[in-house]
Image (cartoon, rainbow, N blue to C red; front, side, top):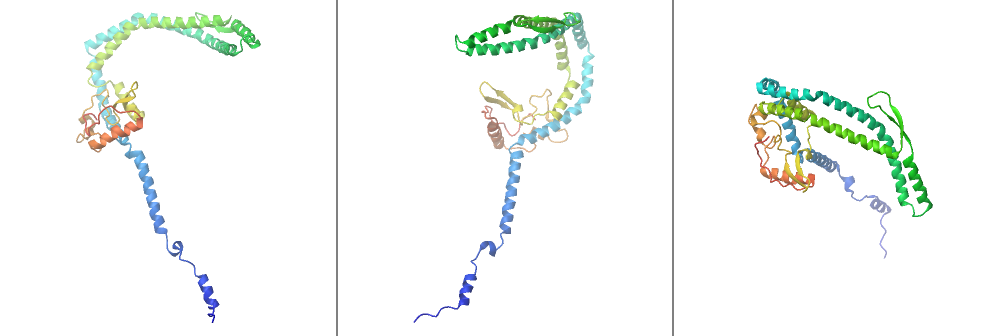
Length: 338
């Protein structure tokens, strides 16, 4: 006997019941929030790691510039006094008189050489453009002649064109030797080349004569400046102002500006990225860089670093940045330079 069919209502109810959907049955807001926060945190960490953590020398350099500039400004007011005292000594005055006397002795001859160089340069400027234009055209024709088939029509054509171009007369407005109006002259290529080379040789000869005349005054002036530099306890005011200007406007915060490279062997001989002040013209002491507290400026950075981290930084980070080996040993965590 056949079983009785189920009621139609129960069949409809079974088909209408949806399956359990996790997206519909529970909220995913918490998961999305956690993922979003993790994404924001990782992006922030990546920016911090790229901009600061992997480049600790930038913070070191900024603090060095701040302290060094403050020190330079504190000694600037005394530099002029010390320099003036040295300039008032009999030894400096004698050197100064000797240098000025030597310069006065050759001043007229040097001025005559300068006038002659100016005249030569004016004539050289007038000849240079026509000569270079003609030379460029001749080079093009010569190339076409050399690449044309031997014995062909084009070889004969370019050969005739080359001879014609060399004989072509070009107008040149040459200034007069002793000033005055310019004179127009017509020259072929050989004459242009001769004038160009002759003026260059004459200019070099006159400049050599000027250098010979200034040899003694230059040596005496250098002797005077060396005496001042060796006897003054501080740098001259101009040098201190130049150092301040360099720190405030053009200090190099990159790696390459503080590397001593041996290009012949492709190696970095010495790294001064974080060991700043080692080659400054002033002898910087710890008390100069930290006048109001402990000499923490002797540490390699504002926060002392371990020797292991310094080693990794100097021998790994910089080497990877430069792509060349670093031959110096790892620097210690503290050093008696800035």
